[in-house]
Image (cartoon, rainbow, N blue to C red; front, side):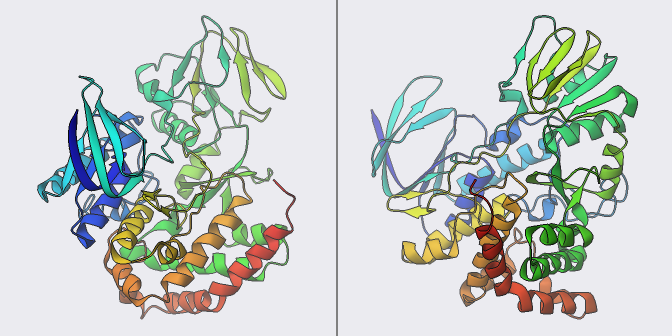
Length: 465
């Protein structure tokens, strides 16, 4: 068996793994081996549906050392007026360039089309999927499990419901290849389903031809409040309004009423109280498109599709041979239990700031390279489990804000954040002369700590589970 050694063995060359390694290599002299079962880097983006785009602007996605896109604002289309969002093809090409950049440092090696067994603290076996050849990797510092929160995508997802013979069911990836249908039944209430509906409507399918099975209603973020650079002031203003609501709300109901009234959370159907929150982000134009769909089924989850009917947890609806059933039910973000990010011999990248995956991975990489002890590292990087329910907005906000409060006390970390492209707030100083920004910063300073305290109080009053 061949043998190699490295300071770090990173399992997973998706967005998180690449962003972590990029930041680690930039701040240290570390030697890294990356392993991925795919031949190419980019993780789930290699399997993404062709019309998917980033939820967030390209300006703060990817690895820190390499820009994604041109930091331009779209002038037309559903994203008009906002910073560009890369397509799946653009992102896959970008991550290949990012890996090439890391390989050029001479301190990163990539073992693609390979699997890794987690054997012991200092050594692991990497197996080439094509040849079966095994390589022993001795790890001098830590294993980095960048697959702990691996995303489930539609093209590789196995439906949880039964499908009878003759029923037309397709993953969203093949939607563009099977347009000959009398109607489309979209199954799922998350961002993938929203993308599928928008794509069909944008491509001329009448709203009357769409039926949307939404097991849960979702709170949605307004893209206006996720913008960087020249459009940063509304983003910071929105964050300050969130902290103000979190600090001053007397009850959970009042909290969500204030968040909705200030535009920080929005819902597709004003008559239905959302119970889900996954950080899905839409523009107002996209919201209006989705609200054109009147045939919304709220009978729970699909259990089985027969040739003439769909069985759901709370009832059944008719269907037929002319319907194409589009499976958008993949769970997307994996909600594995939160665990300490830094442990002896191991790093498990996880969210810290909610809804910003590559920033979080780069933060973990930089903190690993810069600070000496795990207690400090874990204090700066508390794990912040992906949200699922509406109530999770409180937890993710409290954990993220508590971390932000810690970062504000660390001059070195503050300077680093001000200079990295993955930080939404980069360029903040250039807006200091704007009255709205001044008000927003004052509001954030006023409510930064009290928001955490009050959110913890509100969460303590919730029923267990």
